[in-house]
Length: 330
Image (cartoon, rainbow, N blue to C red):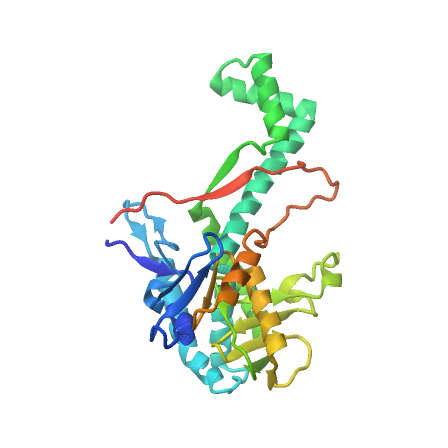
């Protein structure tokens, strides 16, 4: 099997953000290193075997990528219809596009990083709770000693100290572990289907896109609610998805016009929302120094996920988490 380059931002989406200088290319704004470059949609938002995993025969299994491609194929004609300012009725076409949007939300590098951080923080939290309880810790090290040999008191103290504070370490999470986050799209898609859809046109200015182009915005005062209605379930939720430099799809639970136009200030506000939720890359149809500054502004402000406990018992600091990429095979 040959190495396969897989888009974490679909080519079908990026092709609507190509410009004329150079013709047919997308401009990428890299928040991490400040670089600005242009390339075709085929060479943008792509990584080797981003969705693949190692099969039992030692080759890379690409079935997830094949599935995502089939979802994109079904959504493509609906995408074109929406660009013609036609909002799909509650038909199969709308369901196909809702499924596409849900997967667009969870398939991104940012969501997969946060999935890895959640697994890492949960492991560190369990270690912390164990180490803070002398009885549990003694039971743990005794079990450890049965397999690794007798532990001295100095070794026990070292283990306990680093279970309480692991911040000097780096926790590596296999990238395959993060693939299970794709299953969340099964719950998100029906919510998107039922929301009210609006096509937003830029009267002045232009929309950008990013490596996390489906963004769910919630009113700030609902962030700490305790009824479990967070994110897409929150009745204040507004979901934005840029369709092209001129059009953006807006979904919400509130009543809204099917079509409406907005001015430059509102366009810039929505672009800032997209930049704030990006993992690393912003994309646009042109080269603009303002977008380079916008990417740099949110360089160290990536969305994060927190592991909460009812008792408040948790480490003061968590170890840094890296997603480990295993060697790929042809």
